Amino acid sequence: MISHNEIRILYLLPHNGDNESLLKGDLKVVALEKDPEYDAISYVWGNSESLIDVEISGHTVGVTKNLHSLLQRLRLADRTRPLWIDQLCINQWDLKEKAQQVRLMRQIYSKCQTCQIWMGEFNQGIPQADAEEAVEILKYMAAVFEAGGKEEGIALPSSFESDESFKGPLKALESLGMHTTPWWSRVWTVQEAVLPPQQTILWGSTTFPWKTLTHATRTWTGGIPSLLYERLTPSFSTPTLADLMAMAIWVDSARGSDDNPAFVINRYRNRRATDPRDKAYALMGLLPAGSLPTVEDCDYDRPAVDVFCDLSFGLMVNDESLFPLIMDPRLEGEAATPGMPRWALDAAYISEHNTDWFHMFAWPEYQAHGGRHLNIGQLLKRREISRYTLELKGVFVDTIETVGEVWLSPRPPGSDYNTDQRALIKEWERIAKEHIQRLNPDTYLGGLSFREAFGRLMLGNLLRNEEQRVEAPADDEDVETVYKYLERGEQYWTHRTIKGMMTNQRIFLTKTGLMGIGHINTQPGEEVWVFHGGNFPFTVNGREGGGDDYDFGGLCYVQGIMSGEAFERGEETRTVTIY
Image 1 (cartoon, rainbow, N blue to C red):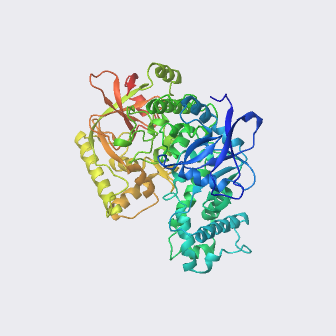
Image 2 (image 1 turned 180 degrees about the horizontal axis):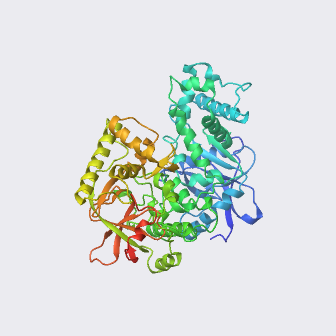
Image 3 (image 1 turned 45 degrees about the vertical axis):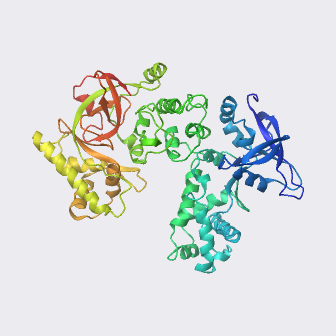
């Protein structure tokens, strides 16, 4: 095995005028501290079952077809080219070496001269001329941004002449997007794109700087040039180009980001990795060293369930709160990692019925714990005993007695969104009113009328913008718009907030008449608790045998106890074990 802080570099030999000849190269071990010159590669392995032979240091080695195509593109005519490629520069069968090299990824990509980003060959049906013209469109958009948003004096791509001439390049741009180019869906490619000092995109026979794409996105978000807009509408729909723009923005958002680790993990949770453990390991290079020490060792001898449990512990310690428990931790069916505790973040993928960023953005706005912080020492001590359980201190609030129907998203094909949503809100209101009237309280907790309490419940007592971020606390006027929507179907500024409060969630009522909105699997009999370090309340299920052992349910919003009121009800603080 190579020594600490050493890597192998592939010196790709020239083709000497015959680019169809056998690909050959030599591997040499170098120390990173000596700042060797090389280009790093970002690509998708492709099918590992059908390999093509190359010659490396005198030995025949099989590489994937996608890598073989890239090496042919990168091979120079008359001189050796130094490259770092994981498929050839890491002994993939030696798990200890693999872990050691993965720990060096931040340095490997940060120290390279350039990262060559391989998007693959042109898709079938995309002529080279259309692909080249597609790149010219991106260069035009980048030039507009670089000129301060002014179109004057910038040469127009020839494809702008007519709708017909624009059609082919637009189709080529569409083929470069997420749905047909696997590079955008892999988790490793994020740090590979943002850590290097320079990046070059290789797409078939075309080559252009990564910054051309990112500068094009600045034009896209800052104001589409009038001539481009004319070509995109009405004959063509802007989503064709929007997909590519969104993917580039999403990747580049990791550059210089100071987001906490939980946000980084969640942002790229929908990306894929052949080895599920890489869903954690591949993002370590984006975080400050030491952020998640229990994960940074990149140990491939540990099963995925252990890696994800340590990731969850690490995120809680880093944030000094229970924030990771609100990140839709569980996956459904075959997508779930075997053996995962219900509380731990299954980072293998994103939940099919998730709540997106809605609750994560609201976390700072609530203080259900009333200033009682997570005991980090107790958390770490528990991890030493068992990484599969949590030991939390908190208070019991109430037991759930009634639940309403879930508002599933995405909606079934052919459904009328507004009609169906209004009908369900009215049903939630009916269930809540009947339940509370049966208990015969004069007013709801906090002195609110039922009308105001239910209206604030549907808003989470907050107002959101189009990005789901919190704008302000909800006021009486906001509450009234909830009822105007119910009564007349008119959408107001509060509609996006209502949507987020409902998506893949359901209403519940407790035995004493509290109203809440909980996770998709909320059931009667679950208990509502507020734990130290929890800005939201959580639901849990008592385990067989009783006592203080519980299965984790999920986060919930409960009207009237989001500012520490649960600790003022006289309930004894207890320590419970969460599975």
